[in-house]
Length: 324
Image (cartoon, rainbow, N blue to C red):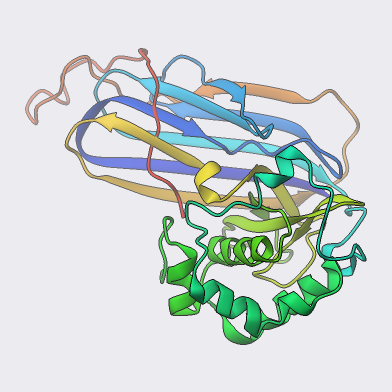
């Protein structure tokens, strides 16, 4: 499937700030069953072109900085991704439990930490779901999915971006990020390496804005990493687009950052995903551009704001608050 994704961030401040430093993890990965064909990143105010690097898990991240005074930041990412059906599904995997033969990297996904806590409540859910009695990875996934469907509710705005599994277990409700964290914690209790996936989900037939999505992957000795979407109780397919992998959300938020100033920040997010017709093969297109938003060499006053010449240039490094 050919998908076009448009992801926009609008940061607004109730006073002027400077020395903003922003880090973005919004570029879809190229991997088996997924190819990034186009990527365009626009940031404003105008600054040096955003730089990019690869983290310890092979995720691409971009960062940029704005040194002069400003009261807004905007980011627009456009990508075209081609997806195909995964070779193996987690819910039908016949690898036996417990999983053995981990590599060094897989052990990193067995440890608890950050928002994923090893608590009595998590162990209780593990027993209630009968996960210790599963004989294969596929059976484990089916038991997990059935228990989550019966006892947990998808409910926006009852948790935050920094909520822990303990809070989700108390409220028995949450969003995709919470379902992924809870599933990862239960997998690690079972001795199955599990990792967090930050990405997008295209829902066919929906014209309204989409949103970022999260699911998780389990390690299979025979097939490698196998994805499962615990929020929708499905094996991810051509509608799921992977952006980044991590031990939890803390490793791979779409955006984070810092700035100098006493202003409060608000963040607006828009995501649109459309399916496209097949296109002729051509080399991948990757580029970065700038938006012409105002910058000021000194902090403007109410009187001279409209008369002072905004500056179009300047830079350092920047980041912002996490997006839920």
